[in-house]
Length: 495
Image (tube, rainbow, N blue to C red; front, side, top):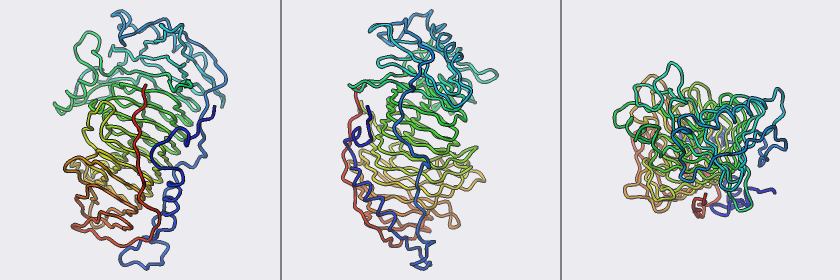
């Protein structure tokens, strides 16, 4: 059954409203102080995002291997023996090893339930190879092991501890090879298969959870050694589809490569769980994140350009709860460019009412410690509620120091509305210096909290109720069209 964006998203902006805002961008000319008003150079280049034509994925038609559950885990826990040596690691990995593809083909390794009671799998780290989709049947849950020793990376700090360095744990799922995926079968009632990292449960033989380690590391100024849930390394054409990802010990999804589609993904981890980013494209090209619901204790999206540039990225028709925002950075050393955000909503609390620890909406963050050029970034139709920091463009993030140059330019925000902002809400418009000012256009902006801090910025304005000023800040009129969006905010779906 085909399920288009329009039918699966009944909240937020209509397609017509987004089209109006986008059309308004193409006609708007930024009037830069000291530049001829008719100069083509005065018009910011608008982001176009992913260069691929991205349609809703479908699960593979060919199942190479089927693995059937033998476990029942009603309380999300199992016996000490099972936790010590997870019984499904070798079963699933053997199927994955047998089904690797050598060409462009794609097959599924399917996890299925034996019956209504036996629908659980308990596993340590797994590797998905070229041309494979790890496919979870409806109602099936893959649980991550609570035995840190099973995740240990040789020569690194001990997994499951706090130390001066990190990197001690393998991800629960490593994707290594092109044309791979992690997907689930979605029922007509909306239920999906899920992966549960159990970040909230005590590690084997301890009274400490993965999330406790993250909090301890922050309090001690050290680093936690926790596993990520899914890490795709230089894996072109990777797909996440109709999958629930819950309670990750660390980042939920980290991707590098060319060609990544996340569609129908539902991430549910509390806003109080530190360092549990939703989806992080890092050194990534041609990415689309669509039709998804993301709740976690760090950035909902964090687009990074550290060791390699990220570019041609679209985030559309998605909803965020209790996160640290839809973010770019903080690693931008190698550059981030051509990123398009369309028709997204952000709520500052999670589905349990927990407030975000860093309640941002739109955010670009970097510093001289790890900065580079961030350019051609466009936001259209963004709805914000219950946030402390609606708009954040910060080149001095966390007071980082160094010799890098964070430079944000050709950034356009067209159509943003904030409601129910928390007390003391404030936006940030801070460029690095007079040589590298923030280059920003604000069109059709309505914020219910208009306090701000600003310095070293050139800002074009059209129908904006916030007019930043400060050291090195210049503003000028921009010609535009469209209007402030009308917003509604969907509840996080029942999982």
